Amino acid sequence: MKRFFVTIYFLFISQVGSSCELYSEPVFDSFYANNYLQLKNPLAFVLQPQGESSISHLSELTNISVKQFVKTLKSEKIDVKLKSWSKISIKEQYIVLGKVFKLQVESMNIKPPKLIIEDDIIQGSAYFDFDLANKSLGRVLLNPKKIAEDSNPYLNILLLIHETRHAYQLAQAFENKTSLQKRYMAAFEQQKISEQLSFSDFLTLINEYEAFQFANAVIGEITNWHVSTKGLGTFASQFDKSGKLKINLPHLFNVHPPKNILPIFNVLQKTQYEILKE
Ligand SMILES: [Zn+2]
Image 1 (cartoon, rainbow, N blue to C red):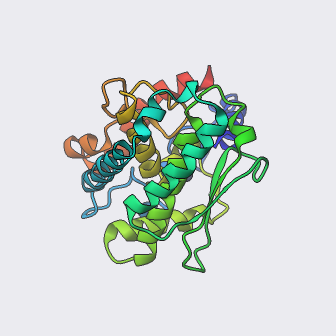
Image 2: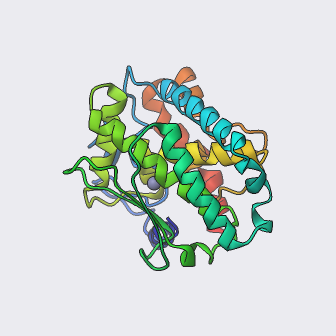
Image 3: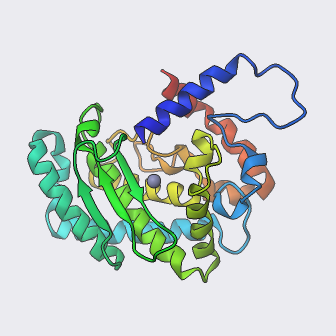
């Protein structure tokens, strides 16, 4: 995640100088959402209008899963550990992470993906490794060494829950029956294409949008919304200090014509751009 962000940020800065020139083709923006690009695979992106499988419906499903998982964590007293996360040792944190993983898999009612926590297993902090050709539920990879370089003490747990959520989505995608399941499949397929996506394009893929929202909501609920989620999803997947979405896409879809959602989102994303470029 971190490596991805750094790359994207660099690309964005390097493009600023050329933004005034005239182009006959759409210009790729490396931070904001690119409509011309998302239109090539509209099912995959939450900013594109897609009828029956509305974002409101998705939001309701995610909320139910969040409540259920938070309840499980509380019943196992994991919430106590999470509230004092920075006061417990790193070693203990990773023992708790193993328990959280097991409980999350049970709560989502799926076969467990593989969990590998190992220094330098990947270049970045965390990764969900999957193969659409076989029906296994992938591998959740965490790199504690890289995670420790970040100042956010909650990064390990936020990423673990995020990556593990992808395994649930992948199980849904393999079902491939409902329109939501088809959209998950379109998003996972998009991630296997080497097409360049901006920061906001990548994070408004329906699986990234939902997985960041899920993890941020679970940790937010338990810590009274005071944990930083900087860089973890766009503002459409992040919550303010009162637990409200910073950009509420279901609400935007309710009050604006669907084709206006992406440009409105981009205007609202300016705040995140300002925060991340600091
Ligand atoms: Zn992800």
